[in-house]
Each structure stands twice: as C-alpha cells, then as structure tokens.
Length: 330
Image 1 (tube, rainbow, N blue to C red):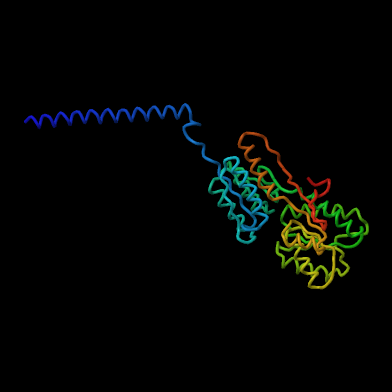
Image 2 (cartoon, helix red, strand yellow):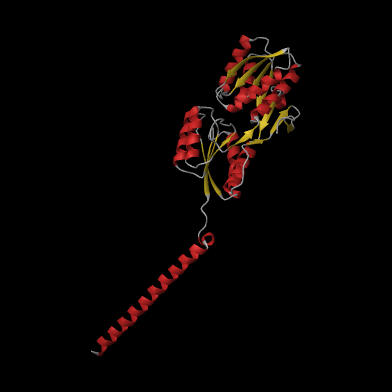
C-alpha cells in the first residue's frame, strides 16, 4: 500500500515537471518569434538572388568567359548564378531555354538578343512578370529589356572600316561575312563599316554573305566571293569563326587577300602573328559578365542604371600587342 502511494506521488511530480518543461519551451518559442519580428534581418538570412545566364553556345570559350566574369561578380554580391545554353548554336533552343528560365521565376535573366520577334516577345513577357532581363553581347532593340551590356558594335564596325581602308590604300573591293543577318551586333558592325568605306571613292563593298556562325560556311562563302569577284582585295569577318574560314579558303585556293577578323580565338591570334590575318578586333567577354552583374546589383539596391553600358574593344595586329581600338571605340 505504501509503495503504491509512493509511485502515485512520483507520477504526479513527474507530470508537474513535464508540464513545467513544456511551458518553458513554449515561452522560449514565443520569445524567439517576437525577436524575429523585431529583428528580421538578424533572425533569418536573406535568401540569395538567383540569376540565370543563357549563352549562345554552352561551351564556347567566349561565352565561358562571360560566365566567369558574371560568376565572380555574383559571388561578390551574394547572388547565385545558373549558367545554361544550347550545346550547339541554335536560336530556337536558346529561346526555349529563355522560356524555361522565365517559368522558373529567377531574380533576373541575362541573355543574348537574337534579333527576332519571338525573342522580344519573351523578354517583354518576363518584364511583365517582374523579371528584369539584361541583354549581353547583342542587344534586343524594341524589347523591354532592362539594359544592354556589350561592345559598341557600330564603333567597332567603323574602326574596322578605317583599318581596312588603310591596309588597302583606299582602293579596291571588299567582301563581308556576317555570322547572322538577324543579330543586332552584326547589323551594326556592317553599318559602321559601310559608313567608313563610303568616304573612299575608289573603294566599295562588293557583297555581304552569311556564314551561319560556321567556319566551314565562312570558307565556302569566301570561295564563292572570290569566284564572283576575282579582283576582291579584302575579306572582313564579323563573327568569331569568319576570319578563320576566310583564311582556310585562300589557303585552299593558294591565293592571298587582306583578311580581317573578330575576337581572339587561339587560331585567330596565331594567324595574326603569322600574317595570314591582318588584324582582329577583340571584345572583352569577362568584362561583359562582371559589368552586367554589378549593374544588376545596383538595380536591386534601388539605384538608377544606364540603358546601355559599352565594354572595351582592343585591336590585335602583327605587333602582338593589344591596343584600344580607336578613339571612337570605348
């Protein structure tokens, strides 16, 4: 009888202890909740902003450099960068990836303008959903993109025109290769070249061909140009593989022409050093990526951002030293 009473007493004491413990825990939770309300910045970490960068081609060295610049800047500003792109250059797949990015509702999207109505429509849709879109490398005029970061392509075309005219002695016909006629960057480079060549009465642009951003197609188009215009004095390539494609063609035909290129692929730099290509204008993709993210950070902080931010272009010629590409280029 005595043991039974003692057991009941112990159970009552244990129950009281457990009740007190539960009340203590609930009180601590209520106190923590009040602290969270009063000091939200200290109670919970602010989630990092997710930025999606859509490249023209996933493992293209140029786009990997843009990614590197963007990723380094994203780390500095506490952002998460997601990098994606088509395995091979494909504008339709690029648009599909843009569609997927919009559906995932990131904090912002970085994408190349492709020069079509479908691209503008998707950018406008993202903006309507409150997702800022930044165009890099090539702009998308007429869209609701937040701002553009990349080369001053009109100035680059003008600089190319001056260099071609100088090398040709102000005389002769010129053939032009474009990666794609749709891209705003290519159109502006051609416009700049035309504006300079027009100042030389004894020079003219014989024809403009499209390489579809293919070295093989650039070679075939150069062969076609030389067949149609045997006296062609120079060939200008405005996308990264055009100069090398033109070089392949003149070597196969065992002829010589003045060749001008864009960007700094290793083979292009070697061709410039050896004299096969006169010069190349080199963009700064690392700078594009870092500048785009830095400006996004300013935007998120409520600061005003410029509509256009031009990155630098440098000229690489046979001297082996890169130099600013003329007074009109940034």
